Amino acid sequence: MEEIQYTTISSESDAHLLLAQALESANFDNRLQVAFDGWPSVVIKFEGEDFNGGIPSRMLESFGDLQKIIYRVYCQSAYGHSDIRRLTVSEKELLEFVVVPSEGSTDVLIDLAKVFSSIVGASNMSGAEVVTVIVATGILVTASVAWKNWLNYRRQQHADINLQAMSADETERLRIVTAALTSNPILQENNKDIDDFRASVARKLKEDDRMFISQSDEVLVDGKEAAKIVPEVRERSTDAHINGEFIISEVKTPRSAIEPFIITVVRASDNLTLRVEADSENLTMDQIAILKEGTFSLRKVVMTINAKVLRGSYSKAKLRSIAWPIND
Image 1: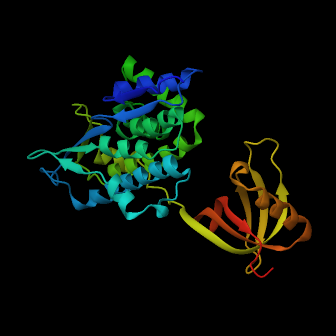
Image 2 (image 1 turned 135 degrees about the vertical axis):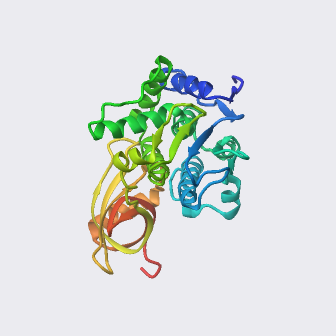
Image 3 (image 1 turned 120 degrees about the horizontal axis):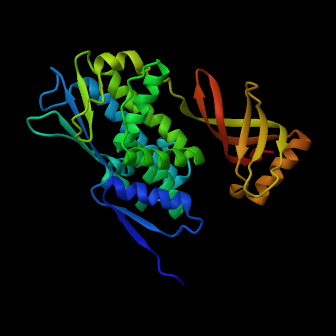
């Protein structure tokens, strides 16, 4: 048996190199164990009348949004879902990060190395998944090129030609991150949340405030520009648990073992109709039998379903459990 390989990421360069290897190597070691030492971290500098060695209270909500992103990444890694409500108190304590303003300055250090070590320590992901989801999320949160690219996109949306220039090294790093985003739906979802975090920080700048990233002397954005080009933070869907007795109206059987069952169900109590996915590998033979028999007999079944809800509409419904009614 081959020896398990270990690698430690201590810089952004290390992270980009490992991500490129995971994306481009057909023989990437899925048993690779990743550790973090001093990365991911980022220094955000603020200038303005409210920033004098501390953080005004209006900024605290934004860092709370980042904490929720960390929770979701942990859930994705450990449990295969993004429902942070299932985290225990001890898990949340383990994942808590500290925002450190430098004494007498406006530099704010966000050090996530310990937190990301905890995420990897609880992970059930393969080596490649750890790199393309967890490490790549760390890059999106902390890398200056990710922040620059986000703002340049916003500027282009407003027909602003004054884009921030990128070096050849930054352009190559952006290519690697873009490739990871293109190929990974979980990372795409994380990136939407990170975009919201960035927008939340930028929208809280007052007109004369200025923001810098990663100890650069170049202004990333000021409050006047942010008010013009940065959108309001999108309204977010919330997690919902849907329980009850359902009638199964349709089941689409997967064509392969990696595809899910697609189930259309109607809740008996209120006629709520949902399109639900059920992962084939997570269903027992008894549960598959219930799906099939419930469809043909129109017998009620008891289901627990996880979903997202936004303005009363449900999406991304996933089957959590299915059984016959106890008294049936």
